[in-house]
Image: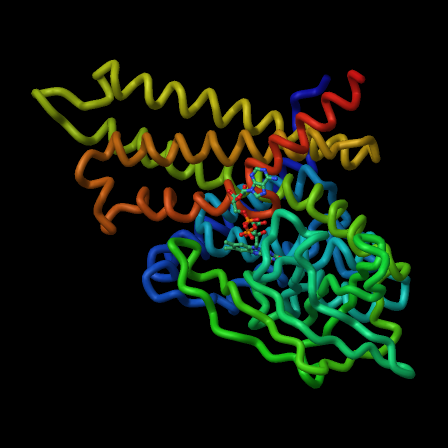
Length: 383
Ligand SMILES: Cc1cc2nc3c(=O)[nH]c(=O)nc-3n(C[C@H](O)[C@H](O)[C@H](O)COP(=O)(O)OP(=O)(O)OC[C@H]3O[C@@H](n4cnc5c(N)ncnc54)[C@H](O)[C@@H]3O)c2cc1C
Protein backbone atom coordinates (compact mmCIF):
# COMPACT_ATOMS: atom_id res chain seq x y z
CA UNK A 1 0.00 0.00 0.00
CA UNK A 2 1.51 3.31 -1.10
CA UNK A 3 0.37 6.45 0.70
CA UNK A 4 2.49 8.76 -1.45
CA UNK A 5 1.07 10.74 -4.36
CA UNK A 6 3.02 10.43 -7.58
CA UNK A 7 4.96 13.43 -8.86
CA UNK A 8 2.26 14.06 -11.48
CA UNK A 9 -0.55 13.90 -8.91
CA UNK A 10 1.29 16.34 -6.63
CA UNK A 11 1.93 18.69 -9.55
CA UNK A 12 -1.77 18.73 -10.53
CA UNK A 13 -2.86 19.24 -6.90
CA UNK A 14 -0.40 22.10 -6.38
CA UNK A 15 -1.28 23.75 -9.68
CA UNK A 16 -5.01 23.62 -8.93
CA UNK A 17 -4.39 24.84 -5.37
CA UNK A 18 -2.53 27.91 -6.64
CA UNK A 19 -5.16 28.58 -9.31
CA UNK A 20 -7.96 28.28 -6.76
CA UNK A 21 -6.21 30.52 -4.22
CA UNK A 22 -5.56 33.24 -6.78
CA UNK A 23 -8.65 33.08 -8.99
CA UNK A 24 -11.49 31.50 -7.00
CA UNK A 25 -11.02 32.28 -3.28
CA UNK A 26 -11.19 36.09 -3.78
CA UNK A 27 -14.56 35.74 -5.60
CA UNK A 28 -16.19 32.93 -3.60
CA UNK A 29 -18.12 35.16 -1.18
CA UNK A 30 -19.47 37.35 -3.95
CA UNK A 31 -20.50 34.35 -6.07
CA UNK A 32 -22.50 33.12 -3.06
CA UNK A 33 -24.11 36.53 -2.43
CA UNK A 34 -25.00 37.29 -6.05
CA UNK A 35 -25.80 33.78 -7.39
CA UNK A 36 -23.30 34.58 -10.16
CA UNK A 37 -22.43 31.73 -12.54
CA UNK A 38 -18.71 32.49 -13.08
CA UNK A 39 -18.44 31.45 -16.74
CA UNK A 40 -15.06 33.19 -17.12
CA UNK A 41 -13.57 31.05 -14.35
CA UNK A 42 -14.48 27.85 -16.18
CA UNK A 43 -12.93 29.24 -19.37
CA UNK A 44 -9.70 29.94 -17.44
CA UNK A 45 -9.84 26.48 -15.88
CA UNK A 46 -10.12 25.13 -19.43
CA UNK A 47 -7.08 27.15 -20.52
CA UNK A 48 -5.19 25.55 -17.61
CA UNK A 49 -6.19 22.04 -18.70
CA UNK A 50 -8.52 21.46 -15.75
CA UNK A 51 -11.84 20.80 -17.49
CA UNK A 52 -10.83 17.40 -18.84
CA UNK A 53 -8.33 16.20 -16.22
CA UNK A 54 -9.01 12.42 -16.42
CA UNK A 55 -9.67 12.06 -20.16
CA UNK A 56 -7.03 11.13 -22.76
CA UNK A 57 -5.31 13.92 -24.62
CA UNK A 58 -6.76 12.68 -27.93
CA UNK A 59 -10.19 13.68 -26.56
CA UNK A 60 -9.07 17.09 -25.29
CA UNK A 61 -8.21 15.98 -21.75
CA UNK A 62 -5.07 16.07 -19.62
CA UNK A 63 -4.59 12.30 -19.55
CA UNK A 64 -4.39 12.13 -15.75
CA UNK A 65 -6.02 9.61 -13.41
CA UNK A 66 -9.10 9.54 -11.18
CA UNK A 67 -7.08 10.37 -8.05
CA UNK A 68 -5.77 13.51 -9.80
CA UNK A 69 -9.35 14.40 -10.65
CA UNK A 70 -10.34 13.96 -6.98
CA UNK A 71 -7.43 16.15 -5.86
CA UNK A 72 -8.44 18.84 -8.38
CA UNK A 73 -12.10 18.77 -7.25
CA UNK A 74 -11.00 18.96 -3.59
CA UNK A 75 -8.84 22.03 -4.24
CA UNK A 76 -11.53 23.82 -6.28
CA UNK A 77 -14.25 23.01 -3.71
CA UNK A 78 -12.04 24.22 -0.84
CA UNK A 79 -12.11 27.58 -2.60
CA UNK A 80 -15.82 27.59 -3.56
CA UNK A 81 -18.49 24.93 -3.24
CA UNK A 82 -20.42 26.49 -6.13
CA UNK A 83 -17.48 26.25 -8.50
CA UNK A 84 -16.64 22.83 -7.03
CA UNK A 85 -20.06 21.31 -7.74
CA UNK A 86 -20.20 22.76 -11.26
CA UNK A 87 -16.73 21.37 -11.88
CA UNK A 88 -17.41 17.93 -10.35
CA UNK A 89 -20.72 17.58 -12.25
CA UNK A 90 -19.08 18.67 -15.51
CA UNK A 91 -16.36 15.99 -15.21
CA UNK A 92 -18.35 13.13 -13.68
CA UNK A 93 -21.82 13.65 -15.17
CA UNK A 94 -21.42 15.78 -18.29
CA UNK A 95 -18.18 14.27 -19.66
CA UNK A 96 -17.63 10.81 -18.16
CA UNK A 97 -20.64 9.07 -19.82
CA UNK A 98 -19.48 10.40 -23.20
CA UNK A 99 -16.04 8.95 -22.56
CA UNK A 100 -17.25 5.63 -21.11
CA UNK A 101 -20.11 4.88 -23.50
CA UNK A 102 -19.62 7.07 -26.57
CA UNK A 103 -18.49 5.88 -29.99
CA UNK A 104 -15.30 7.50 -31.25
CA UNK A 105 -17.22 9.97 -33.43
CA UNK A 106 -19.43 10.94 -30.47
CA UNK A 107 -16.38 11.50 -28.29
CA UNK A 108 -14.84 13.73 -30.93
CA UNK A 109 -18.02 15.73 -31.42
CA UNK A 110 -19.30 16.02 -27.84
CA UNK A 111 -16.47 15.23 -25.39
CA UNK A 112 -13.59 17.16 -26.96
CA UNK A 113 -15.13 20.67 -26.59
CA UNK A 114 -16.15 19.90 -23.00
CA UNK A 115 -12.78 18.45 -22.00
CA UNK A 116 -11.01 21.43 -23.55
CA UNK A 117 -13.14 23.74 -21.41
CA UNK A 118 -14.94 25.43 -24.29
CA UNK A 119 -18.29 24.61 -22.67
CA UNK A 120 -19.91 22.76 -19.76
CA UNK A 121 -21.70 19.41 -19.92
CA UNK A 122 -24.71 18.15 -17.94
CA UNK A 123 -26.58 14.96 -17.10
CA UNK A 124 -30.35 14.83 -16.57
CA UNK A 125 -31.49 11.74 -14.65
CA UNK A 126 -33.79 13.05 -11.92
CA UNK A 127 -37.47 13.75 -12.50
CA UNK A 128 -40.21 15.21 -10.31
CA UNK A 129 -41.37 11.75 -9.16
CA UNK A 130 -38.06 11.17 -7.38
CA UNK A 131 -34.33 10.69 -7.80
CA UNK A 132 -33.66 7.72 -5.51
CA UNK A 133 -35.93 5.30 -7.35
CA UNK A 134 -34.48 6.17 -10.73
CA UNK A 135 -35.85 3.20 -12.65
CA UNK A 136 -39.32 3.74 -11.25
CA UNK A 137 -39.48 7.49 -11.70
CA UNK A 138 -38.38 8.15 -15.28
CA UNK A 139 -41.35 9.16 -17.43
CA UNK A 140 -39.50 11.08 -20.18
CA UNK A 141 -39.98 9.22 -23.46
CA UNK A 142 -37.91 9.09 -26.64
CA UNK A 143 -39.54 7.71 -29.76
CA UNK A 144 -37.57 7.00 -32.90
CA UNK A 145 -39.28 8.54 -35.94
CA UNK A 146 -37.28 8.24 -39.12
CA UNK A 147 -33.82 9.61 -38.39
CA UNK A 148 -34.77 11.45 -35.21
CA UNK A 149 -35.62 10.83 -31.56
CA UNK A 150 -38.73 12.73 -30.48
CA UNK A 151 -38.36 13.39 -26.77
CA UNK A 152 -41.13 14.43 -24.37
CA UNK A 153 -41.01 14.94 -20.63
CA UNK A 154 -39.07 16.95 -18.07
CA UNK A 155 -36.08 16.67 -15.75
CA UNK A 156 -35.31 18.40 -12.45
CA UNK A 157 -32.20 19.59 -10.62
CA UNK A 158 -29.98 19.55 -13.71
CA UNK A 159 -26.61 21.02 -12.67
CA UNK A 160 -25.52 23.49 -15.38
CA UNK A 161 -28.61 22.58 -17.45
CA UNK A 162 -29.09 26.25 -18.27
CA UNK A 163 -25.63 26.70 -19.78
CA UNK A 164 -24.49 23.25 -20.92
CA UNK A 165 -23.46 22.63 -24.54
CA UNK A 166 -24.87 19.11 -24.22
CA UNK A 167 -27.18 17.46 -21.71
CA UNK A 168 -27.35 13.68 -21.57
CA UNK A 169 -30.92 12.64 -20.73
CA UNK A 170 -32.16 9.28 -19.45
CA UNK A 171 -35.28 8.42 -21.43
CA UNK A 172 -37.71 5.54 -21.88
CA UNK A 173 -37.12 4.09 -25.33
CA UNK A 174 -39.11 0.88 -24.72
CA UNK A 175 -41.98 1.18 -22.24
CA UNK A 176 -42.55 -2.56 -21.82
CA UNK A 177 -39.02 -3.37 -20.66
CA UNK A 178 -38.80 -1.59 -17.28
CA UNK A 179 -35.26 -0.44 -16.47
CA UNK A 180 -34.00 -2.33 -19.56
CA UNK A 181 -36.08 0.04 -21.67
CA UNK A 182 -34.12 3.14 -20.57
CA UNK A 183 -31.52 4.78 -22.82
CA UNK A 184 -29.20 7.79 -22.65
CA UNK A 185 -29.52 10.39 -25.41
CA UNK A 186 -27.26 13.40 -26.01
CA UNK A 187 -29.35 16.57 -26.28
CA UNK A 188 -27.55 19.52 -27.91
CA UNK A 189 -28.20 22.90 -26.27
CA UNK A 190 -29.90 24.18 -29.45
CA UNK A 191 -32.12 21.14 -30.08
CA UNK A 192 -35.60 22.21 -31.21
CA UNK A 193 -38.08 21.65 -28.38
CA UNK A 194 -35.52 21.85 -25.54
CA UNK A 195 -36.78 24.41 -23.02
CA UNK A 196 -34.71 25.36 -19.99
CA UNK A 197 -36.85 26.15 -16.94
CA UNK A 198 -36.18 28.43 -14.01
CA UNK A 199 -32.93 28.39 -12.08
CA UNK A 200 -33.77 26.98 -8.63
CA UNK A 201 -33.18 29.09 -5.51
CA UNK A 202 -31.08 26.98 -3.19
CA UNK A 203 -29.83 26.90 0.40
CA UNK A 204 -26.23 27.03 -0.84
CA UNK A 205 -24.08 26.47 -3.92
CA UNK A 206 -25.56 29.69 -5.27
CA UNK A 207 -23.18 30.00 -8.20
CA UNK A 208 -24.02 26.52 -9.48
CA UNK A 209 -27.04 26.70 -11.78
CA UNK A 210 -29.63 24.03 -10.95
CA UNK A 211 -32.47 23.99 -13.46
CA UNK A 212 -35.51 22.19 -14.73
CA UNK A 213 -35.32 21.07 -18.34
CA UNK A 214 -38.39 20.42 -20.52
CA UNK A 215 -38.55 18.39 -23.70
CA UNK A 216 -41.50 19.41 -25.86
CA UNK A 217 -41.40 17.25 -28.97
CA UNK A 218 -37.65 17.82 -28.74
CA UNK A 219 -35.92 16.47 -31.84
CA UNK A 220 -32.38 15.11 -31.89
CA UNK A 221 -30.60 13.01 -34.53
CA UNK A 222 -30.80 9.22 -34.28
CA UNK A 223 -27.02 8.99 -33.86
CA UNK A 224 -27.22 10.87 -30.52
CA UNK A 225 -28.16 7.64 -28.74
CA UNK A 226 -25.28 7.00 -26.30
CA UNK A 227 -24.24 3.36 -26.34
CA UNK A 228 -26.71 0.57 -27.03
CA UNK A 229 -30.45 1.12 -26.72
CA UNK A 230 -31.71 -0.16 -23.36
CA UNK A 231 -28.37 0.29 -21.55
CA UNK A 232 -29.30 3.63 -19.94
CA UNK A 233 -30.02 2.41 -16.41
CA UNK A 234 -26.76 0.46 -16.15
CA UNK A 235 -24.90 3.44 -17.65
CA UNK A 236 -26.50 5.76 -15.08
CA UNK A 237 -25.44 3.48 -12.19
CA UNK A 238 -21.88 3.28 -13.53
CA UNK A 239 -21.78 7.05 -13.97
CA UNK A 240 -23.00 7.63 -10.41
CA UNK A 241 -20.38 5.23 -9.01
CA UNK A 242 -17.67 7.45 -10.52
CA UNK A 243 -19.51 10.64 -9.57
CA UNK A 244 -19.56 9.63 -5.91
CA UNK A 245 -15.76 9.82 -5.79
CA UNK A 246 -16.10 13.40 -7.07
CA UNK A 247 -18.76 14.35 -4.49
CA UNK A 248 -16.59 12.81 -1.77
CA UNK A 249 -13.71 14.99 -2.96
CA UNK A 250 -15.98 18.04 -3.02
CA UNK A 251 -16.98 17.37 0.61
CA UNK A 252 -13.31 16.98 1.55
CA UNK A 253 -12.56 20.39 0.06
CA UNK A 254 -15.38 22.08 1.96
CA UNK A 255 -14.55 20.25 5.20
CA UNK A 256 -10.92 21.28 4.85
CA UNK A 257 -11.87 24.90 4.25
CA UNK A 258 -13.96 24.82 7.43
CA UNK A 259 -11.16 23.19 9.44
CA UNK A 260 -8.53 25.66 8.19
CA UNK A 261 -10.80 28.58 9.10
CA UNK A 262 -11.35 27.06 12.57
CA UNK A 263 -7.63 26.67 13.23
CA UNK A 264 -6.92 30.26 12.20
CA UNK A 265 -9.80 31.70 14.22
CA UNK A 266 -8.97 29.63 17.32
CA UNK A 267 -5.42 30.98 17.33
CA UNK A 268 -6.53 34.62 16.90
CA UNK A 269 -9.61 34.82 19.11
CA UNK A 270 -9.07 35.27 22.84
CA UNK A 271 -11.40 34.60 25.76
CA UNK A 272 -10.65 34.65 29.48
CA UNK A 273 -7.23 36.13 28.61
CA UNK A 274 -6.13 33.27 26.40
CA UNK A 275 -6.42 32.22 22.73
CA UNK A 276 -9.43 29.91 22.53
CA UNK A 277 -7.08 27.36 20.87
CA UNK A 278 -5.75 26.70 24.39
CA UNK A 279 -9.12 25.35 25.57
CA UNK A 280 -9.51 21.61 25.40
CA UNK A 281 -13.08 21.89 24.10
CA UNK A 282 -11.82 23.75 21.03
CA UNK A 283 -8.80 21.45 20.61
CA UNK A 284 -11.03 18.37 20.58
CA UNK A 285 -13.20 19.81 17.83
CA UNK A 286 -10.09 20.54 15.76
CA UNK A 287 -8.66 17.08 16.50
CA UNK A 288 -11.87 15.29 15.53
CA UNK A 289 -12.28 17.22 12.27
CA UNK A 290 -8.62 16.66 11.33
CA UNK A 291 -8.88 12.93 11.99
CA UNK A 292 -12.24 12.41 10.26
CA UNK A 293 -11.23 14.35 7.13
CA UNK A 294 -8.01 12.37 6.94
CA UNK A 295 -9.98 9.12 7.12
CA UNK A 296 -12.32 10.45 4.43
CA UNK A 297 -9.33 11.32 2.24
CA UNK A 298 -8.10 7.72 2.41
CA UNK A 299 -11.55 6.39 1.43
CA UNK A 300 -11.78 8.77 -1.53
CA UNK A 301 -8.25 7.88 -2.65
CA UNK A 302 -8.90 4.13 -2.32
CA UNK A 303 -12.05 4.30 -4.45
CA UNK A 304 -10.20 6.39 -7.06
CA UNK A 305 -7.24 3.99 -7.23
CA UNK A 306 -9.54 0.94 -7.56
CA UNK A 307 -11.39 2.68 -10.40
CA UNK A 308 -8.14 3.38 -12.21
CA UNK A 309 -7.07 -0.25 -11.75
CA UNK A 310 -10.40 -1.26 -13.30
CA UNK A 311 -11.31 -3.23 -10.18
CA UNK A 312 -14.80 -3.14 -8.63
CA UNK A 313 -15.20 0.13 -6.72
CA UNK A 314 -18.95 0.61 -6.26
CA UNK A 315 -18.97 -0.12 -2.50
CA UNK A 316 -15.78 1.90 -1.96
CA UNK A 317 -17.17 4.90 -3.88
CA UNK A 318 -20.39 4.76 -1.84
CA UNK A 319 -18.38 4.62 1.42
CA UNK A 320 -16.13 7.47 0.28
CA UNK A 321 -19.03 9.78 -0.61
CA UNK A 322 -21.07 8.87 2.45
CA UNK A 323 -18.25 9.18 4.98
CA UNK A 324 -16.64 12.27 3.44
CA UNK A 325 -19.97 14.13 3.21
CA UNK A 326 -20.83 13.41 6.84
CA UNK A 327 -17.29 14.08 8.09
CA UNK A 328 -17.37 17.42 6.27
CA UNK A 329 -20.84 18.17 7.66
CA UNK A 330 -19.49 17.64 11.17
CA UNK A 331 -16.35 19.69 10.41
CA UNK A 332 -18.49 22.58 9.12
CA UNK A 333 -20.81 22.33 12.14
CA UNK A 334 -17.79 22.45 14.47
CA UNK A 335 -16.26 25.35 12.53
CA UNK A 336 -19.36 27.44 13.25
CA UNK A 337 -19.15 26.42 16.91
CA UNK A 338 -15.45 27.38 17.12
CA UNK A 339 -16.33 30.78 15.66
CA UNK A 340 -19.10 31.36 18.22
CA UNK A 341 -21.47 34.16 17.14
CA UNK A 342 -19.13 35.11 14.30
CA UNK A 343 -19.74 31.69 12.79
CA UNK A 344 -23.40 32.57 12.35
CA UNK A 345 -22.62 35.78 10.46
CA UNK A 346 -22.27 36.04 6.71
CA UNK A 347 -19.12 38.13 7.28
CA UNK A 348 -17.29 34.87 7.93
CA UNK A 349 -17.19 32.05 5.36
CA UNK A 350 -17.93 29.08 7.62
CA UNK A 351 -21.74 29.35 7.37
CA UNK A 352 -21.31 29.24 3.58
CA UNK A 353 -19.19 26.08 3.83
CA UNK A 354 -21.93 24.51 5.98
CA UNK A 355 -24.71 25.41 3.51
CA UNK A 356 -22.67 24.40 0.47
CA UNK A 357 -21.62 21.05 1.91
CA UNK A 358 -25.19 20.02 2.80
CA UNK A 359 -25.77 18.97 -0.82
CA UNK A 360 -23.02 16.36 -0.62
CA UNK A 361 -25.23 14.28 1.72
CA UNK A 362 -28.00 14.30 -0.92
CA UNK A 363 -26.63 14.49 -4.48
CA UNK A 364 -25.56 11.47 -6.57
CA UNK A 365 -27.33 9.08 -4.21
CA UNK A 366 -28.63 10.20 -0.84
CA UNK A 367 -26.70 8.83 2.12
CA UNK A 368 -29.71 6.63 2.95
CA UNK A 369 -29.52 5.04 -0.51
CA UNK A 370 -25.74 4.66 -0.18
CA UNK A 371 -26.13 2.82 3.14
CA UNK A 372 -28.45 0.46 1.28
CA UNK A 373 -25.88 0.03 -1.53
CA UNK A 374 -23.07 -0.72 0.93
CA UNK A 375 -25.16 -3.16 2.99
CA UNK A 376 -26.49 -4.92 -0.12
CA UNK A 377 -22.98 -5.40 -1.52
CA UNK A 378 -21.53 -6.55 1.81
CA UNK A 379 -24.38 -9.01 2.43
CA UNK A 380 -24.17 -10.34 -1.13
CA UNK A 381 -20.40 -10.87 -0.77
CA UNK A 382 -20.99 -12.82 2.44
CA UNK A 383 -24.04 -14.86 1.40
C1 LIG B 1 -28.03 21.07 -5.98
C2 LIG B 1 -28.46 19.79 -6.63
C3 LIG B 1 -27.85 19.39 -7.81
C4 LIG B 1 -28.28 18.22 -8.46
N1 LIG B 1 -27.74 17.89 -9.68
C5 LIG B 1 -28.29 16.88 -10.40
C6 LIG B 1 -27.87 16.64 -11.74
O1 LIG B 1 -26.99 17.30 -12.27
N2 LIG B 1 -28.51 15.65 -12.45
C7 LIG B 1 -29.51 14.87 -11.89
O2 LIG B 1 -30.04 14.01 -12.56
N3 LIG B 1 -29.90 15.08 -10.59
C8 LIG B 1 -29.34 16.06 -9.85
N4 LIG B 1 -29.75 16.29 -8.56
C9 LIG B 1 -30.80 15.44 -8.00
C10 LIG B 1 -30.31 14.53 -6.87
O3 LIG B 1 -29.52 13.51 -7.42
C11 LIG B 1 -31.55 14.01 -6.14
O4 LIG B 1 -32.09 15.10 -5.42
C12 LIG B 1 -31.23 12.86 -5.23
O5 LIG B 1 -30.89 11.71 -5.96
C13 LIG B 1 -32.44 12.51 -4.32
O6 LIG B 1 -33.61 12.38 -5.08
P1 LIG B 1 -34.92 13.17 -4.61
O7 LIG B 1 -34.55 14.58 -4.37
O8 LIG B 1 -35.99 12.91 -5.58
O9 LIG B 1 -35.29 12.55 -3.19
P2 LIG B 1 -36.22 11.28 -2.96
O10 LIG B 1 -35.78 10.15 -3.81
O11 LIG B 1 -37.65 11.71 -3.04
O12 LIG B 1 -35.88 10.93 -1.44
C14 LIG B 1 -36.46 11.65 -0.34
C15 LIG B 1 -35.94 11.02 0.96
O13 LIG B 1 -36.36 9.63 1.03
C16 LIG B 1 -35.22 8.82 1.22
N5 LIG B 1 -35.43 7.54 0.53
C17 LIG B 1 -35.88 7.33 -0.73
N6 LIG B 1 -35.94 6.02 -1.00
C18 LIG B 1 -35.52 5.37 0.12
C19 LIG B 1 -35.34 4.00 0.49
N7 LIG B 1 -35.60 3.00 -0.37
N8 LIG B 1 -34.90 3.72 1.73
C20 LIG B 1 -34.61 4.72 2.60
N9 LIG B 1 -34.76 6.04 2.32
C21 LIG B 1 -35.19 6.35 1.09
C22 LIG B 1 -34.07 9.59 0.63
O14 LIG B 1 -32.82 9.17 1.15
C23 LIG B 1 -34.42 11.01 1.07
O15 LIG B 1 -34.05 11.18 2.41
C24 LIG B 1 -29.31 17.42 -7.87
C25 LIG B 1 -29.89 17.80 -6.66
C26 LIG B 1 -29.49 18.97 -6.04
C27 LIG B 1 -30.17 19.39 -4.76
